[in-house]
Figure 1 (tube, rainbow, N blue to C red):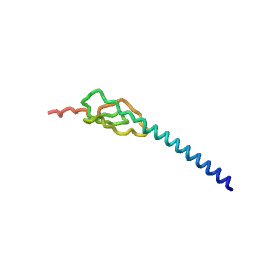
Figure 2: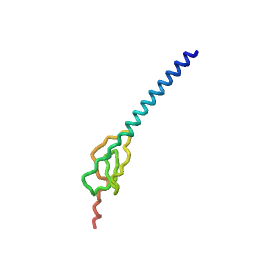
Figure 3: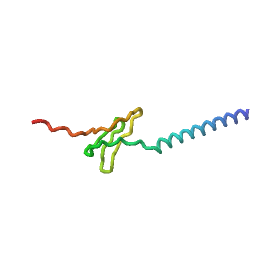
Figure 4: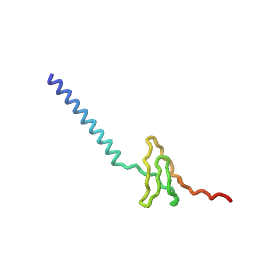
Amino acid sequence: MTAMRDETMAVTLAILVALGTVTGVIVAGVVGRPEPEASAPIDPACREYSDGCVTCRREASGPVCSNPGIACVRGPARCLDEPTAPPAR
């Protein structure tokens, strides 16, 4: 009975160590590698832009960007706050 309990404990401990190692690798990969921000459009007057996944706005301290969605395919960055033409009189 003791040998069976010891074997069960050893298997359980091995599984826990393996899960801890896998979790550490996943967390290190996610935390250690920041998500690149959307490439800014060429027009420096554009204050808000998006590549379809990440939306950024230019602040005095630098760009502030959202997090990308889970299933996101990046495209070329485009300006979201393009100036509108004044109304015709």
